Image 1 (cartoon, helix red, strand yellow):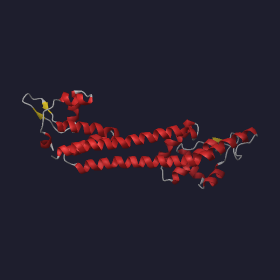
Image 2: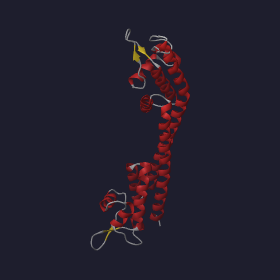
Image 3: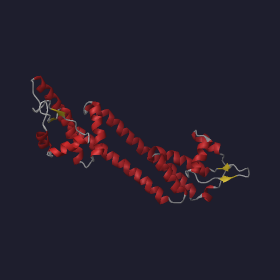
Image 4: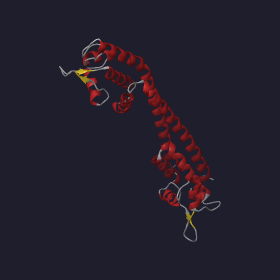
Length: 255
């Protein structure tokens, strides 16, 4: 590949740097890291770059937003050592991760959509029950672990496991010390149950459960889900932009 890039007009490090608002040291660092192919040296000992190097730099900078710095670096290193299949494998992994993230978002949206009416009814009923003086363990001021486990179709040990993972935070009856699941804890248990049925691991559910608690319920998360969708769309577009620049570099490299 190096020979294929050593044609055309000669460029200085500053020429590559200015085009992207970089320092000349950054350009040299990229070459030393294998992101750019090795540059020839002029009679004065200075590096001499070509339009092919400019394409390599543009490809790397375009890959970073979609793949991240580490993967973009690995892709360019693979291309520059004529290991295109390895570069394509890394690119496939980024696309697969984006697809998995989209599936996660869709599962979360479904879970929250199904959960919202029940959570709202639970909270309203709990408020009314408190006004009427309902005590711990009553239908709406709080469920004990057995009844809630039966309602969800899980074992009490499963609810305790979710609690240990920080997914559900029941209260404690001050008189008996028994767990009491108020509306918020029931909501978290239902959310965890739905996502577990969808195949998600406890560690994958934990950040969402924390977001729900921080937002104060399900409905306030709509804005957060919209932002999540926007980030995924931006990543998808960035992957396309990176692919276009990399293809331009590959076309130059194989001439």
